[in-house]
Length: 274
Image 1: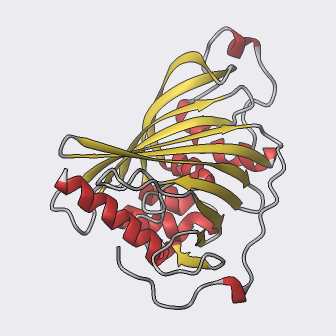
Image 2: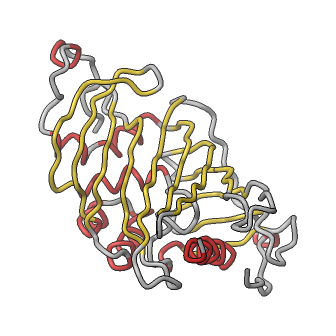
């Protein structure tokens, strides 16, 4: 338990410091449960299908395990894939001592940046903290407490191997389930300008650049759910921490009006250690 407290403390400290559409028509083959083409090609194009769709709602879950103890951080919000802007309400787990419930943190996701409000640690309640995601050793795939939904899709651009598992459903929608492994370095090279620097940082900062995943795509090639398994090296730990990040996308076309803070609303003072 002491080790897990160190992991949670490390993550909250980083947060404080600044933490081609595919298969557009539903084919007869798809309805019979046959995979829509080569899995590697389909998965590498999943991010483009989201851009064509425009917006969606999103739920995120980040589960960390070490020493037999698990903690989970959950988020919910909206994302605009064309503007590369998102907003999540992220709920951190209880205080490690089990005494204090944490208020949700508002996170704004933007190209190269993460903005956080209601982080505490001496930051005024009406101010935002800004973090350059390219400076984070995991590219903000982990330390923000939620994986940027578009970055989660762009990790799949680095798919090296994949297999079709089965036809199933996610939230009542028919999907194709794929399982495979992506390479973060390759994903960075194929990513949009918004995520290239962050994914390149993750490729160098994680314990390994290889990322096993399970991805679920609908018959329009849109990513409905993806689960990545990262190996995260926390500065306070001697051993890597196993991290499972799940992103669920739904409500495509939902309004996603995300406005970034003005300069005067961004906190420039010292942030207390936690």
